[in-house]
Amino acid sequence: MKIILLVVGKSTDSHFIAASEEYVKRINHYLPMGMEVVPELRNAKNLPVDVQKEREGDLLLKAFQPGDHIVLLDEKGKQFTSMAFAEWLNKKMVAGIRRLVFVVGGPYGFSPRVYAAAQEKISLSAMTFSHQMIRLVFTEQVYRAMTILNNEPYHHE
Image 1 (tube, rainbow, N blue to C red):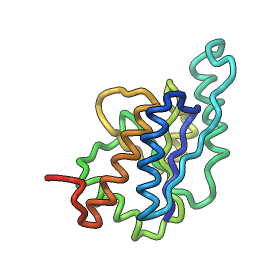
Image 2: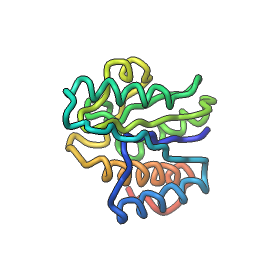
Image 3: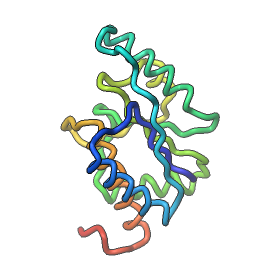
C-alpha cells in the first residue's frame, strides 16, 4: 500500500516544509508515502466560495486514480486516538488497498463531488489549523502509527 497526502496549494513556510518532509522520509522506512500538490486557483479571491470549491474539486478529482481509497481530512470526520488510528491504518494495509489517499482541501473545504468520491472522512481535531500545519500534524500521526504498529518506543501510553 502507498499513502498519498493530496493537498491544495504549496506550503510556503520552510519550517513546516522541512518538518513534514522529515516525517515522510521516516514513514518511507515502513511503507511508501508521498505528497502531491494540486495548484491553488489563480485570482481565487474574486471567485464566489462555491465556484472555488468546484474548481478545486475538479483538480482533486483529476488526481484520483481508479481503485484509490479516498479519505478526506475534514472537520466533520471521525476522530481517533493515536492508538485507534494505528489500528485503523493497519486494517487498511491488510485490506489490499493499493493507494490510500488522504486529501486536504482548500480554505473553504470540499465540493459536493469530492465528498461523493470519498469513502471516509477523518478529523485530526475539533480545532481549526492552517493547511501548512495540517500537513505536519498528519505526517507526524502517520509516523506515530507506524511506530505503534512496529512496537517501537516513539509513542508513550
